[in-house]
Length: 448
Ligand code: NAD
Image (cartoon, rainbow, N blue to C red):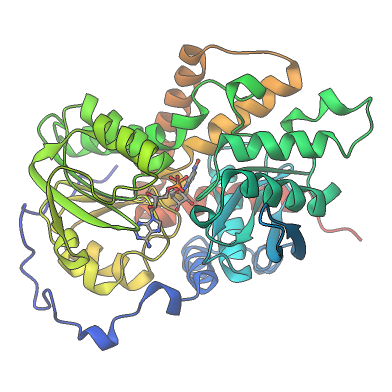
């Protein structure tokens, strides 16, 4: 295994390019970047490094199925609105399609295609018997009442019909959806199958509430998985997390559980933000109070603590660990130049483009890639699916133990592959995932 690179110094980077170096009109805003191009570029880069069989590369280049559904919903106001929903099923050679459902205004076909492909790599990397899928509805869930949210969810699930299924395609929560949304999806699906099947289809979705058959620890799993990877990184780098500083974008399911777990390890949350704005606090925020505020207000807007800052100041706040836990492509070239941190742990899916990754690498900032770091959620989703299938309930200690072992084991496999191929961590993750998929294709072949 290669000796770790020395850590970059804290504080502002000394590069020839610096903050403001890229004129604001030339900075790419996330909406202008196609996420699927990023996913394809990552795949091509890794394929070159590992010499992926061109036939397998061809099979993995496009999703198997792309579904777009326009469905009407009569809202509580009496108005009928037409919604646009997506489900992309990327690959199922290793098992049923698996992936989240996103409710956000930015949902597009290409975004779903990228996210579905990343699910294929993530499940293969974690050696789960699942393929990859993703989908969602293009709307802002914060703008509708709870009753309308239920109507939209049920109508979407009905429209999906048997395009999802407990052994075919298994949705889960993602941005804008939660356990309640999964409970509604499961209930709706169980009402479209035969009465004999009702109790046998709970595992059509994971991330349900524990009361409705969800697993202990599923809600926390993604955030905790990120923290487990940060702990592994700290161990390899010889960093004591006690007294380190954390900056975090996004305070939803993933961000809030991650911040609370990092606090328990002694890290101080010095900068935080969500879709409403950003705040800094040199003495550190209380992540539990932030979580309470977020739960009652629906966002961090108006939080009575710290100082409000703009987005540029947020990305320039010195910290040891930076975690994007919100939207894709949050980190472009300028943010990569600005970020004064030692490591970026990608809790969000696709939070940086290739140029940003290159800049961070040149600056000696470690990048812990999304398909490894945020895979704790799908690991526990698999445990939930298994519990449902077997009619069992496992306690939280049991689930957490399995998650810790799986994350540590995969992290070590990725470290070994990095050393073997003398490559970066993302490429090593792809190499492991693609190697497993290739092996199955090689043995099974393509019929006819
Ligand atoms: P969530 O909806 O619970 O929270 C999203 C957070 O992002 C909120 O705090 C929101 O205010 C913030 N946000 C939204 N738009 C923003 C913007 N333009 N700028 C700054 N902040 C913004 O979602 P989540 O489940 O916590 O997911 C967060 C990320 O983690 C997503 O990229 C998702 O794909 C990824 N992820 C989630 C899971 C999971 O199990 N939920 C698993 C793997 C990966």
